[in-house]
Length: 57
Image (cartoon, rainbow, N blue to C red; front, side, top):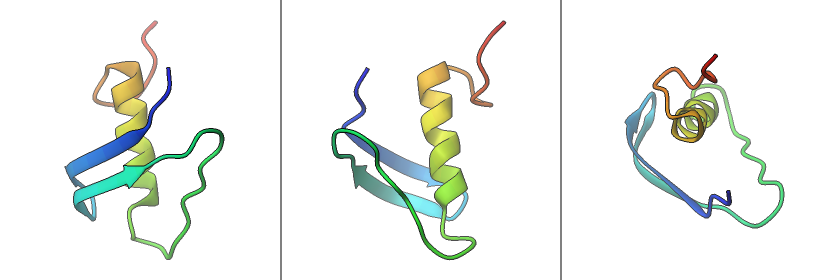
């Protein structure tokens, strides 16, 4: 699976945000409270298919 773009309507401090991802490793950095963990949780939830982002089983 390749994720090329992530669009977040509302999660934590992120509202109507889109991120275009490059092939390989992408690094998100910024000050506390800017939404890095929220973005990681959104991606985990989408990949796992579960709202908490945890793998089933």
